[in-house]
Image 1 (tube, rainbow, N blue to C red):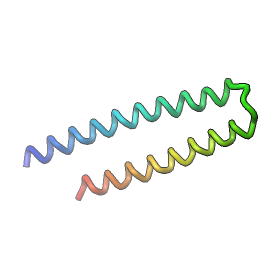
Image 2 (cartoon, one colour; image 1 turned 45 degrees about the vertical axis):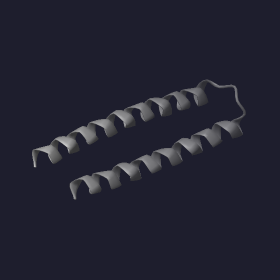
Image 3 (cartoon, rainbow, N blue to C red; image 1 turned 120 degrees about the horizontal axis):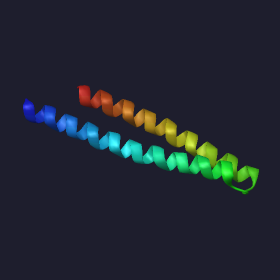
Image 4 (cartoon, one colour; image 1 turned 135 degrees about the horizontal axis):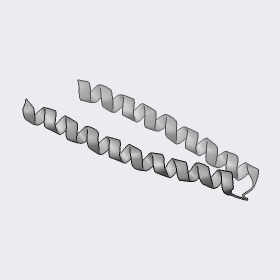
Length: 70
């Protein structure tokens, strides 16, 4: 029982660290959009991509949480 709990905690820590890395990249992409002289269409495309990425991340975390609890 202890091993499975420790493994679950370790996996959760790995996921949280990976999510932190992804959040940092998203922040940098948003900053680029704010500071860039790129065409508006490109900026909107990047923002749409970020939104889709965030939706997929939320879904993945949700599914992983359910999987971990089972």
